[in-house]
Length: 129
Image (cartoon, rainbow, N blue to C red; front, side, top):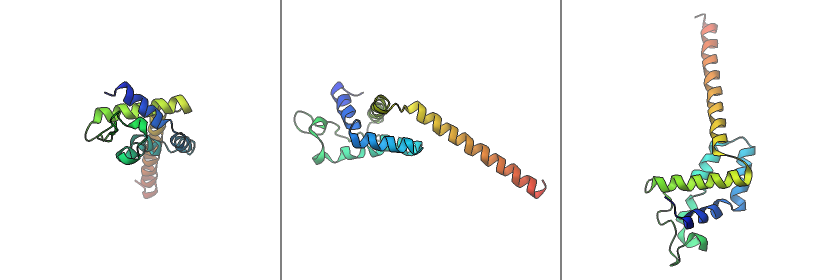
C-alpha cells in the first residue's frame, strides 16, 4: 500500500510533460500494448537511478522514496498501486482510461482470432476439404 506521500510523488512523476506526451502519442498511434508497457515498466525504470531522482522522490533524509524501485518482483502490491496511480493521472490529464486500453486490446485480439479462423477455413476450402 502506498502512503499519501508516495502517491503524491508518483502523481507528479507520471504527470511530467514528457510522460503525458509519450502516452498521447502511443494512444493516437493506436498502440495500446506499447502504452501499457510504457506506463507499467518504462516510466518506472528510472526510479532505480537514485542519484538522478528529483527531491519529491526522496525521503526527508535524502534516500530514495522507493528503496526497491517499485520492482514487482520485490513488492508486487506496491508496483500495482503505482501503476494504478499512473493510470489515474493519464485518465485525469488525457481522458485515456486503463479500461479503454484493455477493451481496445481485447477487440484487437478477437479480430485477430477471427481472421485466423477465417484463414483456416479458406485454406480448407482451397484444398478441397
